[in-house]
Length: 319
Image (tube, rainbow, N blue to C red; front, top):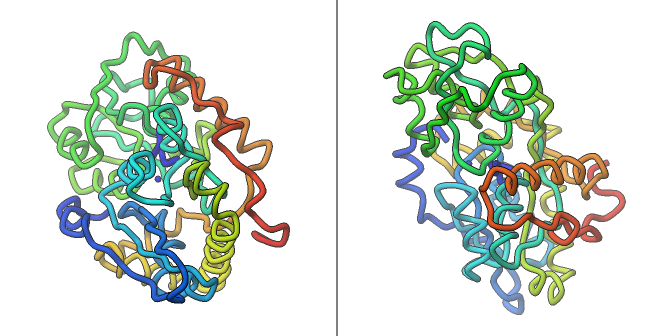
């Protein structure tokens, strides 16, 4: 997905780069202002791809233009910069940006405790064998790695923390520059091609990432009906995808250009469900906010209640 996800960022990085500036336009009524919706190139964004490609935003009277970016962090940054009105990302991505500017999440549209996995090099048979841990600073990769250290009673001061971007880690693992990394797909699966194995997933250390739809307080205050319409469109996308998972596969392939068989495999670990913020989810976000601040990832702690804004998800959504 992460921040941390966002939250929260698929096949080949080269393919992502080729598509990073692509856009998809959804026709809409002429009297509707354009809504620029930033997303990363990742199966976790499949309901947004599907909604755009199948006219679900248009059916809600919206004029949505998708901005396909390399990763969820870019989508969140574009909200802060005022370039896009709406974006998607993991809870960690959104919380990080909320410490820098006006960002508010208004719905959950996906979650999983299986999509983020621990890839290890040959010779690493248990977490306690890890001495060099690869992380994406401040992301869900960072958070879940520290959760693993805590759960297995390991001393974080005895770990060499290697910071890099996700596409770099398979090569670092192959060279032995890192012993392991906890990342969202496709990077754990890419480790298999360089002799690595997958040891655990995030659920094994108590973490379920959430993918969030976010905007700004200003836009949400001025456009509550449009925000609710976006939620309804995403919910319909998830209803369709749960009934026929192949729809998410096709939508992801069209948006990211990854092979269908790879998209199909990766999407098995993504749960497409729209909901408001539950007490359990908010409690997890508080843990993430504490982690980000206590580990120096942000200069001030994110205000979770102010960042996660309820009231935009109809009662019958997600049922």
